[in-house]
Image 1 (tube, rainbow over the protein chains, first blue to last red):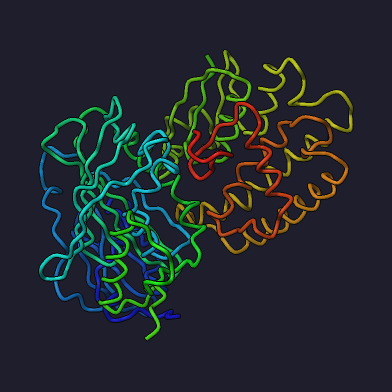
Image 2: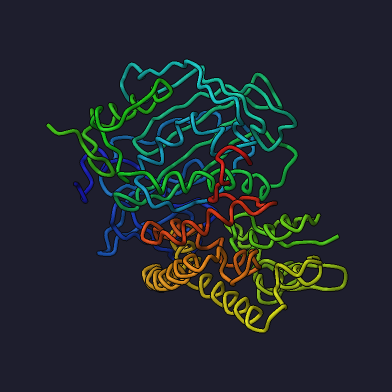
Length: 283
Length: 214
């Protein structure tokens, strides 16, 4: 199994910290096994490797991004992030002992809501994942899942009652996903929850959760509390995944209809030649 | 009304919430954002506990820190049966305190590994894991021999004590620090028993005995 990044992963941008956690004193982190230090330097940011190489940086979507290779372009677009009446919050950066791609796959899965997020994102007996659509964009750069409907007792921090919630998932990056879900405050608009996963090692991730939501009621620490509570519920599921890397062979695990997004995600990773954090199909 | 200075993802805060729930006590939950905000190091909370440690319990004029001390207080103050903090024999009192000390050792190891892996604290995760592994081996052996003598709980006797409540959280959250429980079957049977104590509640990272029930 690959311990070195494949070309597709090597040349991606990865979030390595929330911007609010970056100060003038250097902090350390790992990106695909490479030790990095990062800090605020003047008006910008600086990311260096242990052997003194300066890496490219981006400050976007409330996070600091870098790359071990040479990214072909900037980051994917999240237009809603720039809407001025939204609250944008980095809910936290959490380490999990599992591969980055397993983390994304769990984020795409609705089937676990009633069992793992009981009373919040689902509840018994509402366990059915109804039929939804998954497609690849024309240029093949992104996966989009639409018309995902799910009954949620407490869909967000401003929920006062259970509701049928619509989800749209985007996967515009091998370890990032952007989720849009109905806002309890405004039926015409969607809350945005972005998961930017930093692969620390092939079986270790750090998840940066950035919310861009309609909530004019609650304090930041309550919104973070809500999101970390949900993520904390996912941790034992993620850390008990066997194998810890995502198998790309379609016969390796038995999918059900609800796993359409995951099947597309695995195929897409395989087509891009991703070996880091995955178990590629035998040739 | 009892007030608890609390953080949702803290095992030491959770054990106090668990005890309060088992005893059927109402309380006010005051969130101190330990992570990511590090609010426990800010003046507002340092005025409550100068050591900056969670949890803190207030009950009337009493303000208590240290989760094991808080469990002891709650049992003495609110458990008329005397089950939870056993004073019936000197041996059982001593054994209960021994396991409360063990719970502190779990905080120093299994919890430290979890903070290093999960929340980016600058601790030596490998040293913490090694320490936790030794503790888990001792705990598993104790429980295994105890089961053979017909005892279900850490302190011999028919009913659980605060020793079980004190040791449970960081054992149950160990995988977040990279410490598997597969090698410790007696520990796994004991944690299943704790989950069936009437009044049991969960925290993120710990599931109920029956999935989807809480």
